[in-house]
Length: 438
Image (tube, rainbow, N blue to C red; front, side, top):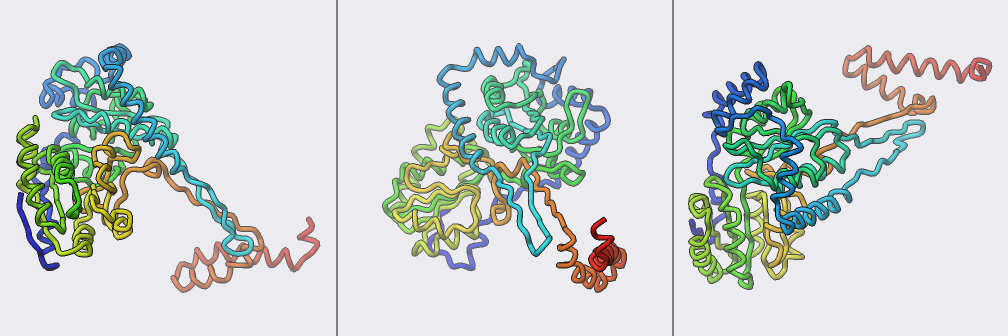
């Protein structure tokens, strides 16, 4: 890992720079797959599944028998863990329900907002080197709480045409409507355009490799909403001299093992801790089955020594990490200085893994600096807010002339006329008691 000692603020931009993710080189391949699936539907999907996942599929839909097989294969212990995580995720997200409030902005003008679920959503769950069944819970649970009518899930099958058993059990627990054996760009295309097997959805959620990321961005330009822009996973740990170096190293490696494009960052005020963490990382790394992934990620990562926590938090907010862990004695006060982050983990025992699986918060978070403008997935991600307003005759009197003046000033005369006719009608009724009583 790269060590940087006492950097000047002018160096911060270089420190927080992520590994380059150039999607332009993928555009031709992604565009071809999207166009082919849009044109040929299931036939194209089956061909791409043979090509990319080496699976020859007679049906793209997971059958009831396959769900039953998965239920029997998953151990009771894992099922209990899934149910515990689902309950905590449901509890946290149910507390985010929107309360409708009616506001009288001025006499006779009432405005309000109503939360309405997105009717159809598509979830993409990777199933390659790390089948992310936890992501099923993170996405399907709030979708079901929000009231989405149709929740479809696409995930790549194995070469035998089977879907990971834990993914299927998680889908059943969380209330997924249908599961399809489709991976990669072809899955994004299927959910975006619809085929004879896969329904077209309004919004797509979920992580994926560069090809999936590029496909999501491409379909978002053509009418299908996506959860957020995304890049490789990342974590930033802020630690003081009292932090446990074993914990810190484990937290750094927990993100580094995601893949070679991931990035980890340690910001500390202690030179002694920095050295201990470096030793711990080296020792723990040797024991990881995904050592090669983690090593490649660590080459993009940095250990940064700063003078004080003021400098540390300035660097953190410039970085805008997906995951931020505050392993400091004063984490309760330090949390108030966090401006840009996807999810924050406070104290020595709040490891990022807890949020990834079972604490209840959502692990689908903005990466690559997007935390400066985007939130992580939450209940609102699966809803739309529709505004309503009602004007009485008193409301026309309150704002009618202002609307006319503003429309006239913008030279939108039809806009002005729409209000003028109503204002004149109200004034006519108010000046003629006989007409008003009728």
